[in-house]
Image (cartoon, rainbow over all chains, first blue to last red; front, side, top):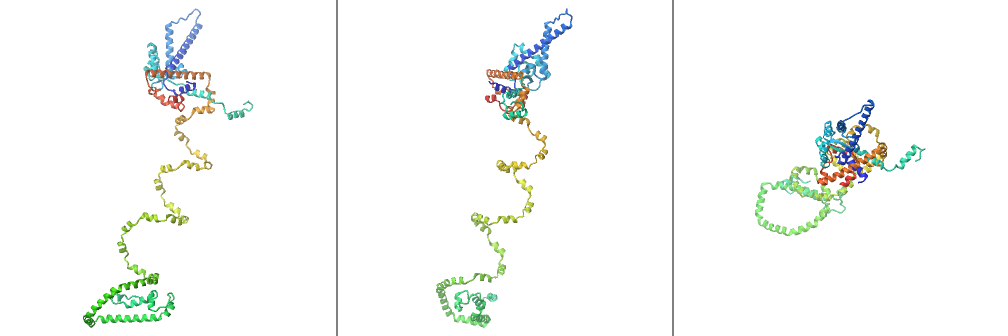
Length: 188
Length: 349
């Protein structure tokens, strides 16, 4: 498939159900971003505590607490964007968006429920994700519970226009002549 | 003039006969010959006629008087009792003679028929030539004649329906030289006599316009031909565009325009390719990160479709029967996207 046809396919499929590859990449991006953010935040917090505490003080964080904090962070990271804009950072990069089954904007209930049910995909050893490929609406298990789905929502139109503009023919002689008139000192 | 009283009594009208002979003596050669009328006796010269025909006139006058006297005497004598007795006795006495005379008369009638017919045939052309129809008609008092005629009764006897049924109207019309009639008509003179203003004032335009089927009329009009004949430049010179635009309610006009439909009909691709809009967009939004995102997203969509096709093939599903997306987004999608079928859709179709 050529580059042009790929762009046109992306344009024409806006609003359609998103496929497994895009969603997987988006999830990977989200996990990376969330983990990096959490790590940075944790390191920053540790650094601040070390700085403001006496030298003999050692910060000892139990792994369980860190895990809970991490999970809580993930819950915040996913539920808030899904409840408001419908897209996390990774989904924004890949141009995906979570919507309700009819295509309307997600609600707080949808976002929270989808976040809480999201681990079911892993708990079921990946079977919860099979629905993304086999289901007619590309719904995973947690999507079916939360009554949501994922669609392509990236600015494909703008991307297409940018692509076309880059491949636009060079300026016409008239245009060059008008440029020369506007700036006679500059070489045409 | 013929004596009407004499005619009614059934007695011989000798006076009338003599006057008639005198009137037509110049027209009937045989009469003029018998009465010894000369060739110089030409009608139309009354004074000469009176001078030359004095003898004939005198003889006719005498005959007229004699006939009138004989008529009077005959009517007086014939009506008396002795005369009637004498006539009866004479009839009885002359019965053998009358019988013989009757035979002779019948024989005479039988024999005289061909002779008389031959004489009439010889005389008739001359009589016809001599008769001046105009003079005869001039002598007839048409008013008196028409007064006697019962027009209503006459018309009542006429079988108008029978006459009309015998008339072949088509043949009659075909026989009419319409072109000849029309060519003789001075149309200009007719038109000049027409008072157009008066005619138009009598026309009920409302009723006339109600009868006109504007749609049918417009269907018959070849607008292309009409427009080719219109000098639009000359027409636009006379149009005050400023005044026209002042009267236009642009808000109402734009409310009636389906902007979405209009935008969907735009060939955005061609617009971006062939105008400066493309370069403006590129300058304002392009960037390495944006281009990279476009590539990643496009590749992701391509891989998604590849995976979906295989999944549908394995599950033996018809991709066309599957929903493409949520109903609200699929219905709204055309409003947010460029119009036209993409190359990939064309290839798929």
